[in-house]
Length: 360
Picture 1: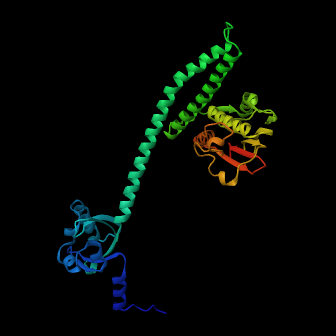
Picture 2 (picture 1 turned 180 degrees about the horizontal axis):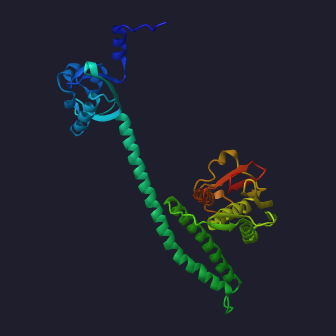
């Protein structure tokens, strides 16, 4: 059964109602038939648009490209997506995107032109905003890196002299003075950790994290991390190690992987009031796991814990110290190494962080 052919008045109604600019142009360079949308788009009456070559309405900088495109269409080529600028009657610029096909035997071009002016404006604003944001981010990272370097030099001197005072080799300091020196040392070292974390973050944001790949003994690395952090375990908290007896090696950046594990295990010790924190090296898939018996993380916070400066406890009521950068830096280092950090937690049941080294 053949399809009915629409009558001319039905086609004319669709032609008139189209939101796009519909056009039939002649090979002679003049518009032959335009729908009413053209008057709304350019501000000219249809009679005015028919009276002059269509190149007259095009932005002078785009006339050459448009003439070349029209010549290609007259040669039988189709236009899939061609953009040019028109000048409206009020003098504004209008961006049109064209699709066109020729009918050679009738010396006609049938085309649809969509007004993309607003789309172009939005894209331009987004690009400008993105460039401004990137420039601001680079400036911030450069400032943080410079300030971190400048602060570390005098701070190292403060910590160094505090250590000399604590030695008390001449016996000149009493118990009270030694307690003051110990406080200077502790706070200086805490401030140095903060400065180093900010410096790491600025390097990450500036894209200056280049992995230093080499074969790493993961079993020995896990033992080293646990032995280094064991003195930080609070009273009543066991720091446990669960690794295979045989050495397991992986080509990776051992320094940054160590940094990740230090952050995860250190967080577990900090937020676990009693029970245990376990660093586990498991196979199939190869992964590190850090599991604690702490209070757990509320579900609404699981999506934000890797954001910089994000901490579950905010304000003056915080019981735990820290910069809020450890997890953000760990995630960034993992991304740079092609690793994944996953987290599982439930309130009252502890938290499990998983560093996936190889997919099974």
